Amino acid sequence: MRSGRPSVVSSGNDQLRAARERTGSSEHPGESLSRQELAELVNAHIWRHYRQMVEMDANYVGKLERGVIRWPSKLYRESLRAVLIAPTDRALGFTNQRRTVVQLSDMDRKTFLRAAAVGAGGLALAPVLDLLAGSEPTPVPARVGATEVAQIRTAAKVFASWDHHYGGGLAREAVLAQLRWSASLLNGARCSARERGPLLSAVGHLAHTYAFMAFDSYAHDDARRIFRFALGCAEEAGEWHLRAKVLSSLARQATWIGQPDEGLTLAEFALVRADRLTATERAMLHTAHARALAKMGRVRETLIAVGLADDDFERANPANDPPFMAYYDAAQHAGDTGHALFDLAVRGRSVREARERLAVAVAGHSDAYARSRMISQTKLASLTMATGNPREATELGNDALDAAGAVRSLRAADDLRELVRYANRHIVIDEVAELRRRVTTAVLNM
Image (cartoon, rainbow, N blue to C red; front, side, top):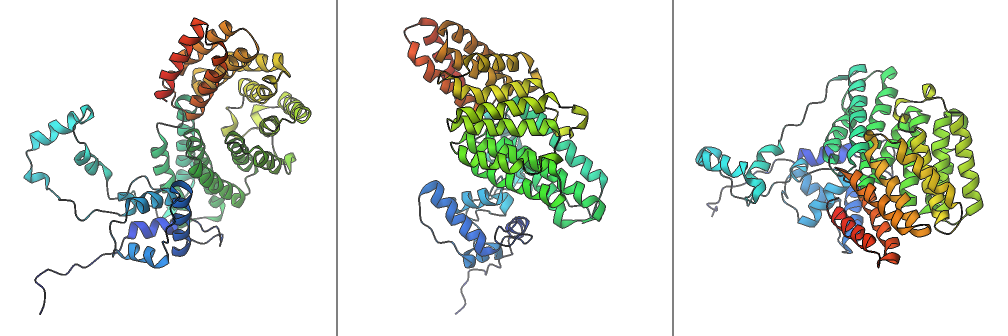
């Protein structure tokens, strides 16, 4: 006897399938991620972040893509978003069929709009967010040319400027959306052989911008994955300048998260065929090299690397540099080398030189580089707190907090925590105690 329940015909989840096919395979370069690879990446992500052993397989991914399963578990959804670089469940085609759908025409519109207007005050914003989620992605043009390449380069420049001023914590999702669309042009649109290289370079530059913002926000897995994607774009395009920049950032990230040996390897890898790079780029890479060496306590080699960076920077000619290297000016060079020497100075070596370089960075950074200026100010305060006058250090620390403004950076927040650790040695001084209170409040807002 037939049931009275109507049959449900599942339509396929094209958004999930498209997201998987946009993601490159690490096992088979040049090919899309397979269902089994996706399953294994999700299993690894869940183990790494939650220490739970799960066994997603290609069959399960197939059920998701065919629409047999529309609403996987929260853990699976979070991990799929992370692996496929998706901002929301809806972006992967996941919908909760058990939710009650209420048509707007059935609602009291005035009540709805009033709730939306005051949602920030505590009322539920979910209906509004559903409306804003959108289900129609921007179409990929049939053909890609110089216009699209220029637009992607402009987006990368604008977002990089935002990152320098505010930090990576505020606009990352917007960059991700732009990156996803831009990356889709690599496989979804026709492109002449002459434009293929510039397109790869532009997408790689945008990917680097997103990855550095993720690094600044401590989304380290995302950062590494997208840095590697950017590196792949650079190498396929034969773009040595972008390759050097991406490897420099990967080296900095590795050193920052306590893996200076990897940072050292990446910096040295970037310096292969250094003759193809500009003097500014070589200076940038030598500072990344120096920062890794300093973290490893290799004093003599650190000083040699700083010297090499100085030599190359003296030969720098901005007219020879690619546009994305414009940030690496005298203030940036002083700050980067000062950061390297900081790790020696807190152990009693090169104290004066480290302080002088950090002071040059603070004085030289404009408002456009507010995050860099604040980080150098904080480092200078920490060094002074560790090796000099704690009251002078307190003034410097307060200057750093005053300069923080709208900066939202977990790297900057960690530097402030480091300042507190050095300040704890002088906690009996009232000014120092007040600085610690201010830092605690500032870190909570970053």
